[in-house]
Length: 283
Image (tube, rainbow, N blue to C red; front, side):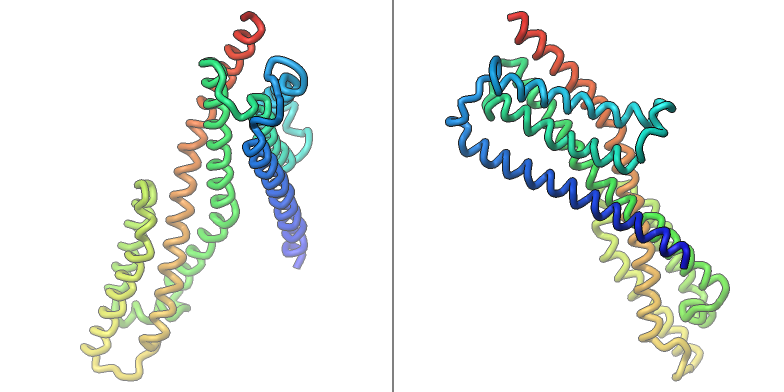
């Protein structure tokens, strides 16, 4: 009971953070749509006035994104605020910064150096959206799915499930299940391999059912326990758990690859922004 009470506020906070970030994203999308439609009427000049101020604000927001990475690596900052709060601020800045920059540019392509800076910013912003998608897929249920699969396998090993009873009558079922699990988890690192997991799971279930029916016929058993219908449900549950773990594993590998690419994108962005700022003020 105590653990349930401890988890519930965290889930509520997570939902609240997602809602607030989503609200900022919708507001930014509406602002971008409005700015794009009225880009010829806004009368914003990048070199002066409000257009210049938006450029400064946007660059400041994009620079503050680095504080989130700095907090994870610099010990004195780790005690300042919670990690979810920093992530929430990081995502909001990653939305509002590019919005301000696009208004600064008045939704137009300028000189070569400004184009490079704008392109790098859009790449980093898009990369952040992809990273957020992968992050939510991993952290929402990866551990839960692994625990669910481990529990099902423990029930089989202890002989306390319908699947375990079926394996006693048809031992080759164990090879079918372990073979599918091995190939599913090993293939999760291959691009798009997990997209066909559902089809492969259905094939494995059909093969297992044929194996079980064959064992019943050879043993001349009519009213076997478990029944074919019960075994079908148990197989569906077990194979679905394997597929879920394999999919989360694929997300985890993709997130690791994204993390390795996101930082170089950021370095290129700030290099391009530095060149742009210097070029604008010197020439």
